[in-house]
Amino acid sequence: MSSATPTSARVRRLPVVGALRLGRPSDVWFKPALSVVAAVAPPSLLLMTLGRLDLAPYTMAGSLCALYAHNRPYAARAKVLAWVILGMLGGLAVALVSASLTRNAVVLVTVGALLAAVQKAVCDATRVGPPAHVILTFVSSAALFVPQTLGQAPGHLALAAAAGVWAWLVGMAPAPLRPHGPERRATAQALNAAAAYAETARGGEEGGAGARSAAYAAVHAAWQTLLAVRNRPSTTRRALERLVIRAEVALAAPADADPARLRSWARAVRGTGRIPRTGDPRREEDGLCPDGVGPRPDGVGPRPDGAGQCRTDGGARLDDDGLRRDGDLLRERDELVGVAAERAVAPRPLWSRLGPLAPVAVRSALGCALAGYVSLALGAERPYWALVTAASLYQANITLTWSRAVQRVVGNLVGVLLFAAVAPVAQLGPLALVLCILACNFGAEALIGRNYWLGSVCVTPLALLVTELPGYQPTGELVTGRVVDTLVGALVGFVAAVAVTNRRAGRRVERALTTVDRAREHAARVAADPSSSPAALVAARRGLAAAVVDLRATADAAAGEWWQRALPLERVVLAEQAAHRTLAATVRRRGLLPDPGTTSTYTNTEGASP
Image: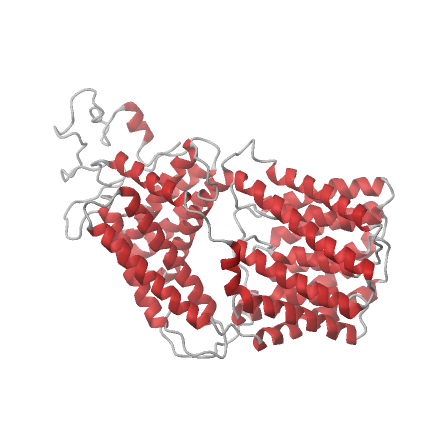
């Protein structure tokens, strides 16, 4: 994870071409894409048959909630989706009431900016996303500029709520078929990332630091997914936890890891079959040693080497993974005890997580408000797109915010060209309009994982087509207004981000360094104490791993800020390196790795299959 390099530069170059570079698509890109289509289509088609397609924007507000929580276990997803729907309804209610009480555009922009800031802060604090606050801000901001009366608001909210319930059902629909699908995917990603790091570390290839950072982040994300549900874990989840433990072992000793076996486990986990065991299931079930001769030391029959272990060519007593077998099952059980102890820890209260996000919230409020005011000054009747553009920019730091601004502008400009081509087809009739909206919904979610600008190419015509649901509008006016609002929102929003810098970022790095040092010292003391309990050792290691991941995220966020003193990046690198050594020591203390200097030869065999 030591991806940072010591530097004293205060101002960082802002990327342009790099911001538009396409990445690999998400492993589950089709899930949100299909979910949003399934959530949007039935309400929209029903309203079309009733001749009330003008009400479709309200049902679409609820339907878009289906985009959320695809990385959460289903028990946690049910709660997250419910809160997202309630948050959407809350923002929509404020917007509808405000639109009913006043038509003063300045007041409405101010309300929209404050809503955007609250939505941004809460989504960041609760880690709801993607797509985080952007969808909620789009819904509430658009509703602010639709003519409304107080008497109409309850009915419109009821439509959004009904569509939200349908979106909740769509999001939970795969649960009966793949009840542990999200956990399986997270575990597979951790195993693949650990295998990639083992390959780069063993071959001495360039990019090893990046592979290590990605692997630690993937393992950390896997634990977050597995621990998202705090009830008693099922047998399947315990088996997945054992595999994540193996990924941790591979990170601690990449030279001794077998990338082929890790990838084999990852492939098996992605399916719907049995979870692969950390040993070879055939040999465990058949009672055979790795060489296929003689029974395993399971208490039945003679022991192959007289000491209860299968032997390798070198005579070392190893299990099927090339790891020492002494008490291995007990150790895995102890690991799960530590995981259970971590699961019992209450999450930090929301208010404590909101405090560090104050600069980002101020950026959002100021940038969105100024973007809306400038758009109004230029003659826009509905400046919500400038407001939404500004709201979508704000990331963890200035550098990322700049990249998002470049992506947003490029994507929207290409998107208006796509809208100009699609508009004649959409205007053929209500059904054609609904089908074009569904196609844009699918395209946006299918492409946005490659790069934000590519998804924006479909988001822009989607937003423009939604404005035509109440009635068709001149294409030229829509295109011109969207281009102007995009440029205004991106320019003014970025200026606000530069003006409101995160001056506390440096202090947060210092605090993160202190946290890592304390966690490392605690883990070292626990590992050195022969009387420490397994649960205490595992909890100390988990705490240290979480502190290291938090340090890297904090340092990355602070490194992109302008106008601040030089960051102690050298200390960050050294702290990470020391923490990695301590993590390896805690794993070694668990008996899963050899002590330094041992001459045992570790043998890796063919990967297990479910």
